[in-house]
Image 1 (tube, rainbow, N blue to C red):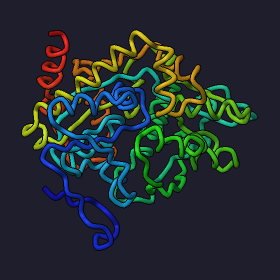
Image 2 (tube, rainbow, N blue to C red; image 1 turned 45 degrees about the vertical axis):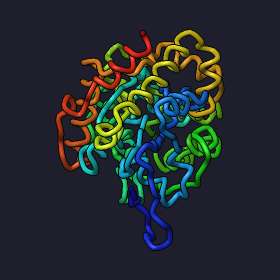
Image 3 (cartoon, rainbow, N blue to C red; image 1 turned 60 degrees about the horizontal axis):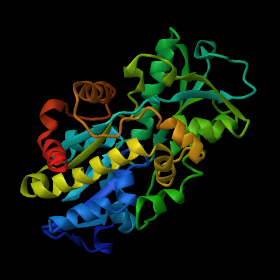
Image 4 (cartoon, one colour; image 1 turned 90 degrees about the vertical axis):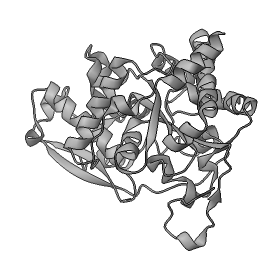
Length: 359
């Protein structure tokens, strides 16, 4: 079949021909078992057993491989990682099936300059929060959605509302940045700018007083001595505060899944194998995951994954996390259509993978 991909100049690039038994994948720089399965070659191994092949979406020229990472508009695609693009893809782009979720324990932080007198979010009343704004209208502004959700949660914890602070847009070019043969090669190119984002630079310059940052980025900023955290959601017992572009979602195009059940099960077998290996090899696992994520060093990665359950699952709480994320996206205009997350999820593929591994 021929899959027509999104690109700014359709005449410049030929469409990609995708074979009937060819799967493609894309994985965010997140703590998910598929990142380890991919590094070990286990996904390719499992797919070969069922007569299928595997290709990396971001190995394509950037004009072809960038936007489908968010929209899922690429036949035969597996996507694992942040749930905001996955929710947007299902709501507004193409029919996908949710086959697994991985929970996270770090909902993010609020960061200010180290020389700021503020010691809490409550002390930021009347001051300026920086909020990234993408210049790319062809994809969901997931970075902004994550940050806006984090800022609003922090304000609520401090007894404040959006009306109590000024929120300033910080322009983010948000374009593709090149291709690579595998995720570890791709993210190695971006380790620095994943920490020093435009809003972090605006904070350092004094253009804003506070920003939201993920756990890994906050650690990187703090290590410079120029920033500090005044809120860390992971310190709170309320699990819903950890919903921050997570639980991470493993999805696949529905038509492909229905026609190639064995390929979906094979992909999940690899993820389950990697999850079990991670459970037994946390330190070695941190070294592997550090290649495909962006905490400052391996020790930070090891600390971050200490409580992570890497086994993909579709448990009631994980699905409730998807509902919380989806509700925010609907209410704040990030997606146009709502949908039933329980109907989106299909646990039968994972059940079959688990059964086949146990036997």
